[in-house]
Length: 122
Image 1: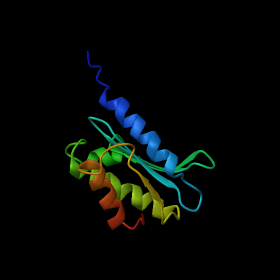
Image 2: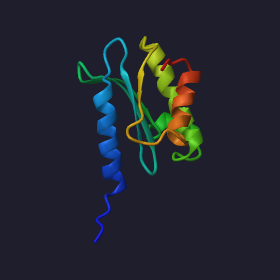
Image 3: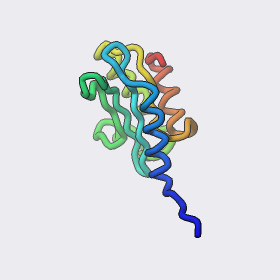
Image 4: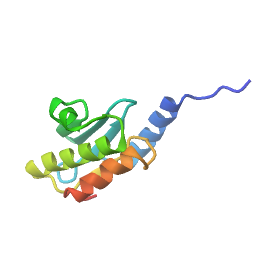
């Protein structure tokens, strides 16, 4: 009998392999992305201090008001521009991108490209 591992377990394992390769510092924090079925979340984290410096998601009232749907590529791109603007206001220009074990396509890629266009470097 074949035991199949769930997708969330595979993603979590992949995320831990990615996290072993890099860490966010004060000079270059980590842009962590999480995608659920209904929302997109992005945080900029300083792993040395263990603190979230900037966060944005489609769950926020201001962001949700600008969107017709919260689970499509356009919503992810909007979150990317919001997180980049908030980061630049705090003086964060360069980050390390953490895709969270998700494949770099669709919503994750849209968020990353929008953040790059809005001024973040990674």
